[in-house]
Image (cartoon, rainbow, N blue to C red):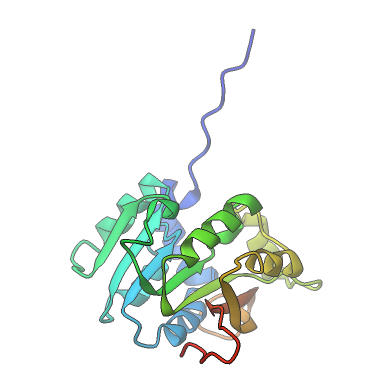
Length: 225
């Protein structure tokens, strides 16, 4: 007698969206990481968010003059995101693997990966990053925000990591190594910031990478703004 295959459990944001969104606002560093997103957006108009989920970070684009596209492979999450922003005519959400977007049809000024890479195994992450680099306009930028694990996490960091559903949270060196496998891109700016859980500077829920990538510059070429 064989056991029937188990149906994969849906992620928390799909099963309990209101609870998950509340936790994001109160515990998961939403406000501070939003500042990093907006700082790098800097007026860029053609926006792609890869792994947008239920649209938690999409709110940073909801009142800004841009054309926003959020993609995710979670049908429930995309439906929730589309419903949350249904009155925003400049925002679209598609149930789609980003690798199905054609570089011939799309050129984005700003591409965001915020907390999505730790849900992808290495092979998928490298494939997606390489394809997405081809969707970037010549003077566009890619911003990657994700965990920067370190040797002495505080109690809140340990708590958040224990709840984390992503199965590919990486140490710092392996994480950076992923990004070096995008041959057409280079890291223009790199920082690790202490991400407070809420509005106050304490407690810290995680240390995060914030990386700005751009098209690799030819020798003597001018850097992208």
